[in-house]
Amino acid sequence: MEEITAAAAALSSAAFDYNRANYIFDARMRWGRFNTGYSMAMAQTSQYREDISDLTELTVTKADTYHTVGTICFFLNFELIVDGSLGVHGPAPPGWLMGLYWTNVCIAIMFLVAFTWMAMHSGARASAGAAQMRTHSVRLPIPTPRMLDMARVTANSFEKQRAQDGFRIPFAMPAGKESELDEESGKRVTISDRRMPIWYHDEVEELRKDEGGPAPSPTSVPEHFELYRGLQQEWWCYDVYSRIGILFWFSHWLTSASLYSMCHCFTELRILWPAWTVTACFVTAHWGILRLDITSKPREGSLMCLPIEKIVPFVPVLAVFGMSIDYSVLDPTPFLQGLIYTVSWICYGIQLAWAIRLYDLAAPQRSSEESPEHAGDAWSPMEWPLPPAFKQAVYLVSAPKYLEPGQTCLTQEMKAAKGQKGQTAPQTKARECEPAMLPWKLFRGAICTTISMWVLIMFGRGFEQINGERFLLKQEGRVERWPS
Image (tube, rainbow, N blue to C red; front, top):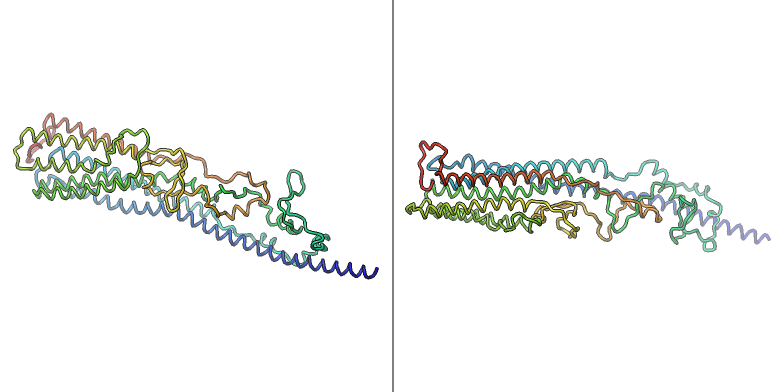
């Protein structure tokens, strides 16, 4: 009997020492796991803050670039208007060409002001949105002193454990399977086949009582991406149309610069061939930028189906042809005068068609399906109605809707329930709101103004062609040449 008692005491002592050693080991693991988990989560949250900075910097950098370009453009535009005044040092160019020149240069100013203001708004709003998210939403998950005290376990805490845990015989008395408390039934439900001691379940209830949120899934995405995409609704349209505005400004400015250069060559320098060479340079540049930026077809149901962007760069070629005849030594026969007027009307017709085509190119269109994401490529969700013609030229990057395979969000993991109860919990999504399409409305107004200006100048040209050039104005001191 004494031998049995001694053997039982030795077995109990060995089991007690074994379980106490396990408890102390698990306590160290508990503290290490707590600190490692939060250290990784803080490192990933720092990456999230960099995500916000990178996405914002893309818009702000473009806006700053547009501001710099806009400043130079203002100077170039007023150089053509003020310092490049035509008709000051000699006879004014013919009226048909001045109509083309002044309409283009003034339309360029209109788009210049539009894209500069839109760029200013997009950069300022993006900076404000990023500052708000970085200071309010995306913060480092730093544990509080109370959480640290709860994570720390002393060795004498083993004395508070249940007797069956303190004297459990290994292998003969295996630990129970991992379980969690079912709130509906009030009973513990097995959630895995892992054998876990009771103090592990106590740790889950103490340290992870705030868990139970949505568990990450292959379609889940970090919350800061969803929040940021909702913020982008307020400025992406300004970003897009400031970029398109730069192209429209360059298109009209290059045409007006070419017209001014040929007028300078003919009216003041009296040279023929340089007028053609300088026109060729501007035409090539104009054709090149249109080919680079207009990468796709415009929206469906276009008003102008013809690809006028492939024709409009050659308007100065027709103009320099007409000026070559106008300022030549040929006799001003009715045939030559009619030929010049015919060429001028072709130029006006192309410019009017180009103004209508601008509407089709800039008009937004909502996509019916999500475009695939490719590494290193610009991407935007289908909810953003981008102009199809410029979709690949605006360089817009939105926050992704899905994580790449193998990636996970530790913050969501830390909040997720251990079992299945968190699988159907709703995830934070981008706020549901319509995109701020005010930039498109302003841009549409500018394009309609452009169309109206060409209609008005064509009416004026028709009136003067019927009644005589400069019929309504006094011409004291003016030296006129045919057909002007």
